[in-house]
Image (cartoon, rainbow, N blue to C red; front, side, top):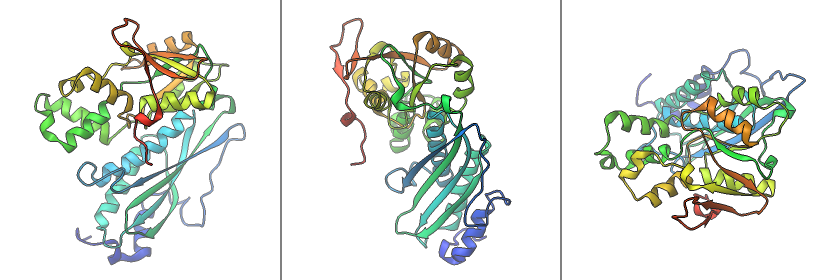
Length: 332
């Protein structure tokens, strides 16, 4: 294949043939995919859309990275619901002049991520568009009593995060402003960029969670839109509030090399795209899960009856701060 060949050069059927090579031959080819679902489980479906210039750009995300992040975003949503992935479909809108090599690298990134979680591409669609857009629908299955919902939080529940926050934001800033990383090692730089370009959906948390939790319902969400956003969304859906302890929300140490502690805390709360899980469950169970997870997992607060989400400082160095959804990124 010529490196300068475009989508226009091979046409719709040629492109479909290329893309079908990334999919299981026994599933692709008809008007729809046929997937088997255990009769004791329920189907969980999620959709995510990524748009050139909004979610990715050539400056920060080469095509294979776009593919990885697109897959990871959807698998993370399934993890946040307590579901095991069984397949995804890909809707692809492309300018005709887009280089074919870009599309192939996109699909390579998709499959590199999906293969780690034994998840196939089972279908999709393509069309012409002035803007490159990737729309993914992911399918998973879950045992009914183990489905994690945002609306299940109860007053007294501990609020647990499965890992640290702020690394993805810092990785993005390094890509946008390489001069910011002069004071950190190449190894640390690579780690932060990797956190942004190749996030890991926390499907690994679920087996550990179900070993600890037997009958209690768990509330949860992923932190792709930010840690604070995740807590606020859970509280809104559950009709509760929360108190978050400032000392338990620690920014990555290297973030403090660029900005004040207040700014670092803000981006830890609102930076987003860390793809960790935010879970609400009884305190003793939360402690057991933190001990099993390690690697930045922490209990950061408590669910309250009062509807507001308040950031508090138990050492009283800072006044209480009310958190709101308007403080983070919103598309509109």
